[in-house]
Amino acid sequence: MAIEVKVPVLPESVSDATIADWHKKAGDAVSRDENLVDLETDKVVLEVPSPVDGVLKEIKFESGDTVNSEQVIALIEEGAAAPAPSGDDKAETKSEAPAPAPAKAEAPKAAKGSEDLSPAGRRVATEEGIDASKVEGTGRGGRVTKEDLVKHGKGGGAAAAAPATLGARPEERVPMTRIRKRIAERLMQSKDSIAMLTSFNEVNLAKVKQMRKDFGEQFLAEHGVKLGFMSFFVKAVCEALKRHPVINASVDEGDIIYHGYQDISIAVSTDKGLVTPVLRDAQDMSFAEIEQAIGDFAAKARSGKLSLDDLQGGTFTITNGGTFGSLMSTPIVNPPQSAILGMHTIKERPVVENGQVVAAPMMYIAISYDHRIIDGKDAVLFLVDIKNQLENPHRMLLGL
Image (cartoon, rainbow, N blue to C red):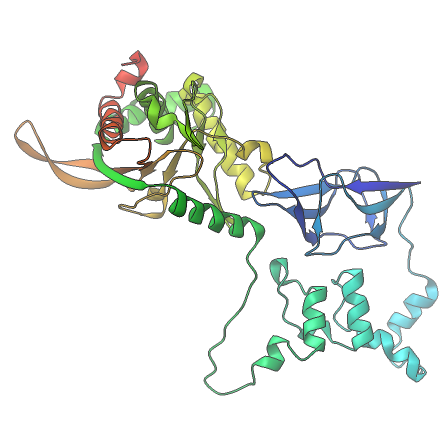
């Protein structure tokens, strides 16, 4: 019985997806829940698992093709087993000097190096007599696609276009992924549609560091997660947003929407680009719940397991360039949000306390905001509010 493999249901904000990479080819045995193919959307890479045990009977779309929600992309013969190589096949594999074949039977040799190609790719390689191992791939992970083979067959391959010369300066042209294209579009949208301005302040994190030192081990033993800096910033942001609701607002054409909740987007860097999973109702979360959720998001992002639901919404964003050593930057607002907080690296710097110069762990913080609805006074007071909470972290526990 043939079982259909379909594109998962996509939310309204995602119109379609692109076939990124097939992990199986037609004729391969597959197991239930085994990942068959990666689909790339504007926001995340989705894995499509096999619904049953069987054999992948037919692949209907190749890498690079665009597919829609619930579209059938493959067929699986349920309960079937992959054919085992026959005795004649084994004997032929071991033979060192096979008998000459008729001229027309040379076609299989033309597909040299095509073992990892899609069915359509193998067909092009065979028909055009192309050694796929000598073709530069532009697909995911350097995989050779059908388009690479067609281009190579027309004399447009990288090897044909770049003669071997001494002192050559190599270049590589790689198509943007859909996620990277979407990031670029969002950044240009932010630049072109928002009157963005950035304000800075600095915060002394000595008391936060002391709290982590005093209670870190007990916190880990009690909750099974480390007490990091991010939970302090999330709690401080939530409290400040309650007192400065315009920072948590968004623009919808001629209206301003004030959100009575704090869904905090946390910027997470992946090898495919920056993603911003959302802590929903962060105002109601404890320190431990925040740390656990952020840890889960980071693990899912690294393994490509973030779902579209993880990335939907968000009323305010926190990004931490300090993890990469950034001392100061101007973060870009993520529309339709109206503001973003930038954290940076912590540096021991001389500061004056009670008339004495002392070394303190200082961090520059920045808020970029949409000046159409947020006045400079509101942005500065919001940043000062965060500074006061972090320099007196006990206030957060008291709701002050």
